[in-house]
Image 1 (cartoon, rainbow over the protein chains, first blue to last red):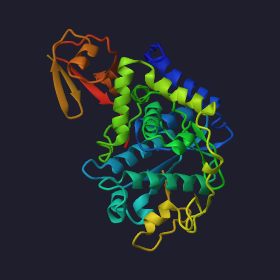
Image 2 (cartoon, rainbow over the protein chains, first blue to last red):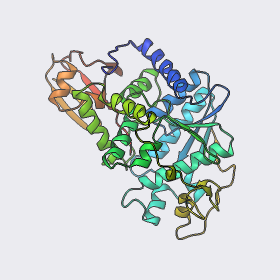
Image 3 (cartoon, each protein chain N blue to C red):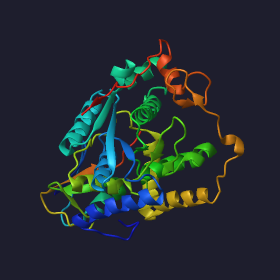
Image 4 (cartoon, chains in turn orange, blue):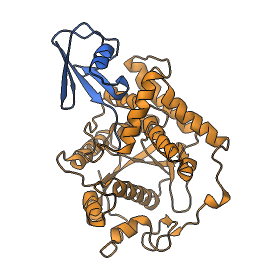
Length: 306
Length: 63
């Protein structure tokens, strides 16, 4: 790990990653051992490693897998679900599975095709749906906090994208821990200071079986392009990615991106699902689901447990 | 020769060079992959041996 000027053997690496995670959880006051954590898992290296680490550290961590129905060619969602269920059953952990097609009547690609949202790619539909499902399960099942497996490369890529477009409101909201508000779960990213490569190494060394294949819709995405740019920079200047992100957090804390008072938006409950929204009437998710058909109201209990 | 495999792509390099030199030669950033030999991770200063296959695991994901 050139950015840390550190080289570790397998045994010590597998101790170092959880110890660093614990430090990050405490530093950003993410959660305590008395709180219930819901880990959003995709079947990928980051989220499954995060779940593994939280269990090892003794946190109360259950999993949530949103089944997206992305099965073109690679059977991506089918394989992801299988690996998540395998991970949970081998460790005796609780996994909530929300099958989007069962609950909302359509897969992610089908919703994207029907609503013409996101041009030829369903990524914006996918992101909106995952955020809705994660928040709903956290709220309905009384979890204190929602944890995602975003790593430093994910965060630095988003930061680069928002900086290139000077998206001030997004810059203000980006951070390792977003406090909860009425109706919106607290969100935390305990892996935000680990390089993506470090998390892949952790998953492989720990023997975690994860989805190696990329989502078939990810090819050509802006986030992957930004990650490649940042890796080019990192190659020439080891530690550049870490410094970019950490200096941003310091600058934000120091008030460099201090928001105007009027940036705070008034939120009200969605008329259908009850989740907070800045729009009058329906939230963005319910509007999307309702486009061209009656709204499907997801009631509690529409998920299975592995 | 040494075979280097990354998903559907295959490369051949001469034995005796380090993994880092081999990655440079085939224009793959070490930051974007992990290298395995017989399922075990190897470091960038590892010398590649005649006849072996090195499998690269892509680490970049997202969408």
